Structures are given as structure tokens and as C-alpha cells.
Length: 69
Image (cartoon, rainbow, N blue to C red; front, side, top):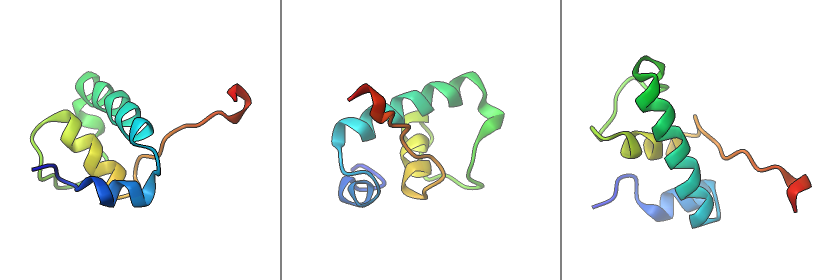
């Protein structure tokens, strides 16, 4: 079961693609620098789960550059 639930994440970010790419980028950052965690306590032990938890708590937001569109 995915934690946090997808519908909770979609309240913050309306695109599943943007959720996936942002979580993947943040997970790579966590792997490179494990001391740079943004929350005190995590439910997930995996980096992607931790990235999703940070997104759900609004600590991480997608970086959308509108000039590309």
C-alpha cells in the first residue's frame, strides 16, 4: 500500500507525472546526501517513500519552469 496515498499527493500536485518525476529527483538527492532529510520521522524506509512523504508534508514541491511551455 502506498503511503502517503496518491489522492493525498494529488491534493498538493495535480499531475501524476509531476509527482513521479519530483519524487524520483528528491530520492536521488536523499541517496547522495542522507543527512539532508527534511522530516524528523518517516514511515517509509526507502528513499522514494521518504521523498513522497516530504511532498505530502509540503516540504518538497515540484519546480515547474513555465518558460519551457
